[in-house]
Image 1 (cartoon, rainbow, N blue to C red):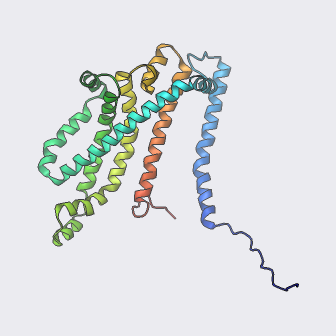
Image 2 (cartoon, rainbow, N blue to C red; image 1 turned 90 degrees about the horizontal axis):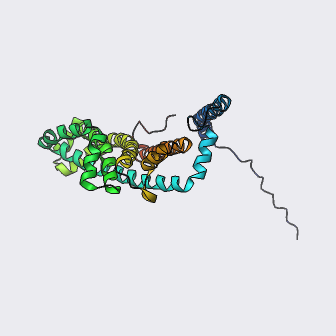
Image 3 (cartoon, rainbow, N blue to C red; image 1 turned 60 degrees about the horizontal axis):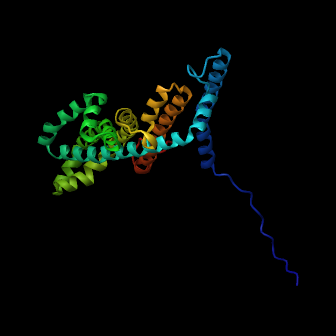
Length: 282
C-alpha cells in the first residue's frame, strides 16, 4: 500500500559563525610565523649552499635534519633524560616556591627573615653553585634536578608572594568581619586572588627549568645512554659535529616551547572563565 507521507526536506548544513571566526583567527595567528619560518629556512639553505660553507662551520638546514635522523637514537634518549630532570626540577620549584610564599605571606616575621636570602640565592650564578652541588650530591640525576630547581625556584616564590600580598584590602576586611580564620582567608581569598601571579611565575619557571637542567647536564651529567642534551652537546662540540650540535640546540628550544605551551594551556583552563588575562576577547 502506497502512502502519501510528506518527505521531510533536508536543510542545508549551516556553518557556525563562531567556528568561522575561530578558523579565521587561527589562520591569522598561525600562518604568519609559518610563512616567516619557511622564508628564513629557505634563505638559510640557499645562502650556505651558494657560499659553499663547510658543514662544520655553518651547516644547511638539510644537514641538520640529516644529522638528527642519523643520530636519532642518541638524540631521543638525551631528550627524554632532559625532559625528566627539567620536569622534576620544575615541579619541585612550584611546590616549594608556593609553600614558602604562603608561609612568608602568613607571617611578616618569616618574610623579613628569609626573603633576603632567597634574593641572594637568585643573584649567585648557577655555574658557580653547580660544582658545589656536584661535590655534595655527586654526578647524576640528583644534582641535575637540584640545579634545575634552583634556577626555577625564585620566579615561583617572588610571583606568588606578590600575588598573595596584593589581595584587595576591602575583601580581607569583609572576611575578617565574618570572623574567617587565617586558613579560610588564605585558601578562599588570598590564594585564588594570587592565582594569575602564580601562573605567571610558572610560565617563567618552566623555561628556566629546561635551561637549568641543560646547565646541570653540562657540569654534572653522566655519560653513556643516561646523558641528557647538555652532556650530548659537550660530546658533539668536542667532536666538531656542528650539524648535530644545531639539532641538539633546536631540540632544547622545542622542549622549552612545548613546556611553555603546556603551562599556557593550564593557565587558560584555570583562568579562562574569570580573569581578564585569559578570557576570550570579542
